[in-house]
Image (cartoon, rainbow, N blue to C red; front, side):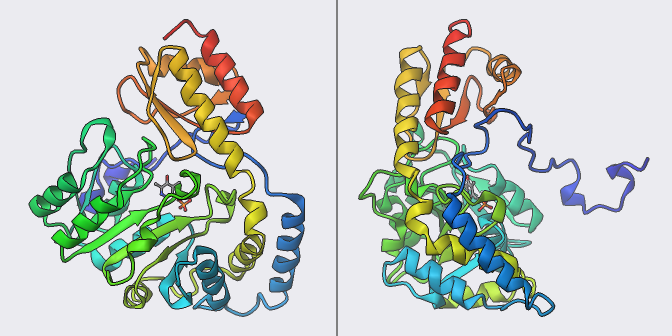
Length: 359
Ligand SMILES: *Cc1c(COP(=O)(O)O)cnc(C)c1O
């Protein structure tokens, strides 16, 4: 068999590892921050009807501008946005890739604040963009001063904030985002994949968009919206940014089936998001209980909890897996991350951890 080394692969891809969260299908899957509640039956029925309708004209290419979907996403976001401010793709991962293709690339750089979303360096590498990093303050916070200084030192083409941050759950103050914006001529990108899990009344970076044409805010339907399998992510920005992304997307990148399904889900946004409150309750319960057991969970505004003081994360991971529960080793020494699932899944997880020898 031929190995990668034998192929004329790009030099900058040699030795790289693909994204590879384990996809073990076990009873309790709490490893990739999905919404573990299924889509309600009545929404499924509406989506099926819309997808079936779209099949009647599936011999034709889909609406390249996915205009009805962009209008629906703008209406969902509010903040005075309209279809012209919206871009979407097959998951926010593809949205981020478009952003890097348009504004990054060879000779350019993107700045991030680890520990953060593991796909950022991979997407940077795939687009030939140099991945630069800066340190956070204590407890994974990024102060306005830290953000400003990091951007001043790195002079990046793009600056990435993940708010709340994966894998730590830490929010990012709007002041830090605004400070970074003022310090750079590049793109400032805020990944709000988990913002729906933040406390009611939390201000989104969408509120910073007016007057900031280089600011980009992304969302996904994969997490709170319980739609990970459909692959729909989107962003809001100045219409000029959207024009830039049109230069790099593949023609007809969002299939007619995806557009129909996403429009169906958005038509029932309230119902789709109805489990968010319960997930917040389970998340807070995980924090309280893990603390009681002697671990050090970090406060989280997302649908997962990172916790430390784990003597042997690999062993805990394996023991839980043997009981049909999968969580995530994110590679931070003595830490693990777990997604907040249903009440029953959370109970099972907490019981199983409590029964392991204390730490
Ligand atoms: C899960 C996640 C996403 C979502 O990716 P999709 O491609 O939309 O499924 C984006 N950003 C972060 C930080 C995530 O954790």
